[in-house]
Length: 381
Image (cartoon, rainbow, N blue to C red; front, side):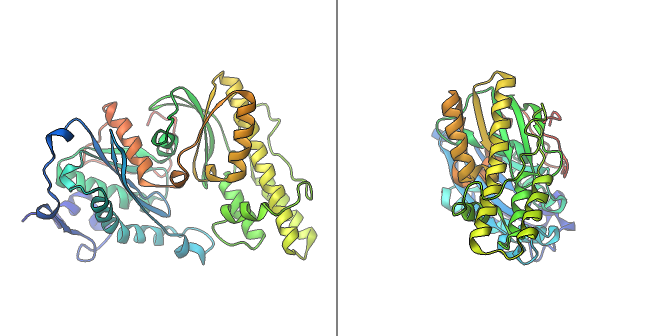
């Protein structure tokens, strides 16, 4: 029978994640999607990217010659908002529900059939183990059914290479500032898979500090965008917050002390009117941005490189972008960001990393796969 059903899913290990009568690929039949590949397309490579490391389900199709053909994303923010953070079990179940329809949407938008996909890239780590297993099982099941190579991708490598989807593209080598909800790192990037850790947070990531500050100010979850918007109305200098590890002599970060400073300020004020909340937000954002910018410039000085790439969800922060643009322009440094819509987790960045890995010959075996909830980016992948 010309369909991808229980046999392919069982081979992928997906049976332990969902009941097949509720989650299958039965709607994706070869009769419906098996469009012949035109001769003119044979020299191009089309990669399907799947991202399910945390609370966003991302599916994208990337053409090696024409860029992103389709990029579908579902955010679970509303589902987790009442809990004040991501609930892993709920995240995994929602990925199971969303992946088939998002795949169908991207194929339809790109006007492609499944057999026109040349390779599949899946996020294998780091992240929530259940969420990672959903995406990896789904991707490897497709690889098995289609007879296509499947590439396991490091989530942060996806962020790191996401500026390659924009124009102009950065050339290797460069320094990368990876800053997101769960990670804050400075990396020296000499090429695909050639990463050297320069510094990282010793406790909380910058994104975690944003979320905690939002909770203290009564702004809800997720906190980053809300804190940044409120900071626009704050008075500079109304509060003085520390710049942790700014003079540590290395390139590491720390944000737990800054969170404590915000907590102390909120408690001392007592009654938080709208202006005071804006002033606290402004002082917090100024402190985080100051540390990130000055550490990034120090990393450039230490390595002797003249290109800086900023990636990760916090890379969309307007205050950070403005400060980096101002300081790098002053220093004659080339600055690169991914497109605004690709700063958060998405399938396009995973497809981009998969394409880069595919070109280096790094291909996984569809029937042998695993996930790595903890996975240092400079561990050799």
